[in-house]
Length: 124
Image 1 (cartoon, rainbow, N blue to C red):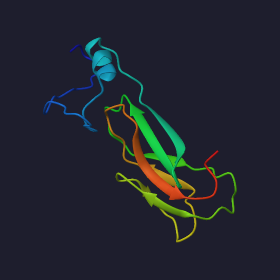
Image 2 (cartoon, rainbow, N blue to C red):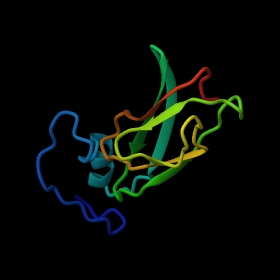
Image 3 (cartoon, helix red, strand yellow):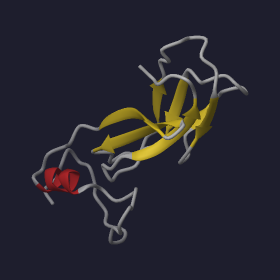
Image 4 (cartoon, rainbow, N blue to C red):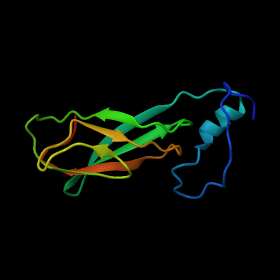
C-alpha cells in the first residue's frame, strides 16, 4: 500500500462474515491508492414490530473513536423505555428517553443496531 497520510495499516487476521472490526473494501481501496479517506457516520431509525430500532453505519473508520449522537424526539414529553446495544452508552432514567447516545464505531461500513426503544413516536 502507498503511504496514505502516514496512516499505518496492519492486517492482524482475515476478516470473517459480520466482522465489525475489519476495514470495508472501499476504505482498503482508498488506502491502496494512497488516499486518506474521510471518516463519516450515518444514523437511521425504523419502526419494527412494536419497537423503534436505531442503527448506525461508520465508513472509513481507521481510528475507532467513539461518536456522540444527539437524539431529537418529535415530542419533548415523549416517554418510553430505551435499551442501548453494542457498547452504546447513554444516560436515561426509567421512563425517560435520552437526549444523546455515545456510539462505539466499527470499521466494516455495515449498518448495525445501536439501540431500541418502546415509544409511541419515531425520531425526527
